[in-house]
Length: 230
Image (cartoon, rainbow, N blue to C red; front, side, top):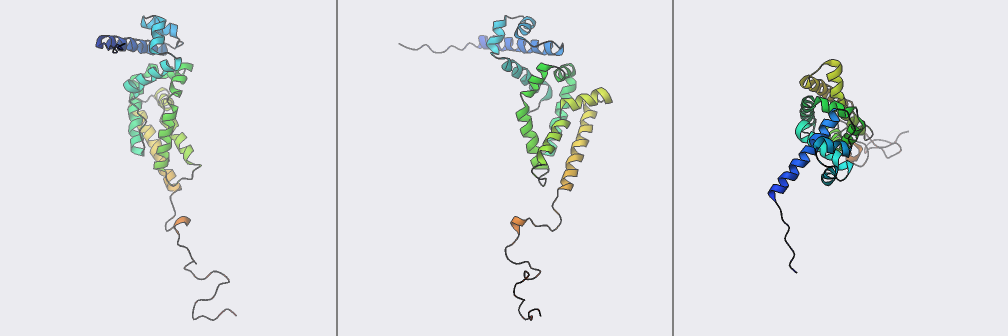
């Protein structure tokens, strides 16, 4: 029996994409209103049946991931590939501009349980970026210091920091980013100075084997031409 080839309809794909976009927009409106993100509420806001929402987003985690993907693509433009100080600062500036553009949504996400769930989903990517930046920007820091550097970078480059500067210091995205950049660069410069190798210091692993050039070790034979100690 000949197997029927799968049929791909461009029109059907466009309709599915449009429905998915309506569902995401419904999630955004629910989040901005501070309401609970449930399948029933999303279906009602999107004007579709609840089973349609499940078809596009089978699990709550899928719904949250779709919402976060939209925020990353359309607001914060973060891709978590920063590995240097300059790349991290540039990424932070772009994200802060996105936070300003979608301020009601970002603030709602900061202060709701479902917002926390959405943001937690991308934590592994963000943590990897901050750890890589800490390793690259403060290479001389001891191993126990570097996680603290990564955590401090995470605090500075965050929607929470942006909100504090916006709400309590009346800063727009440009000024908030300049303030955060000042803190990031000052912290990293101070850490590099604190953990820079001393001038002339040679790590033990790179020191030549054998006696010290200053003289023989105690108890060893005297240099040639010198009498033994009396």
